[in-house]
Amino acid sequence: MIAGIFFGFAFGMGGIAAAVLGVVADMKGIDFVYQICSYLPLLGLLTVFLPNMKEARKV
Image (cartoon, rainbow, N blue to C red):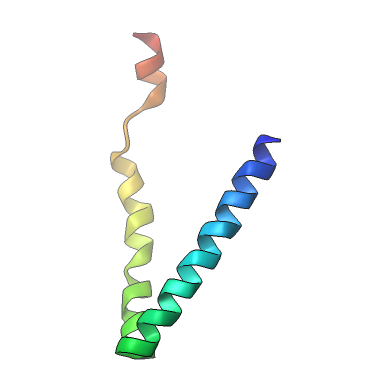
C-alpha cells in the first residue's frame, strides 16, 4: 500500500511538473525550460544536508 502511495505521488507530481513546464515553455521558450531543468540535479545534491534520522531516533 505504501509503495502504491509513493508511486502515485511521484507520477502525480511528474504530471503536474510537466504541465507547469509546458506553460513556462509557452511563455518563455523551450530554451529557458532547458536551462531550468539543467539545474534540477542540484536539488538532489542538496539532500546531503538533510538531517540524519538515525541520530534523531536515539534521542
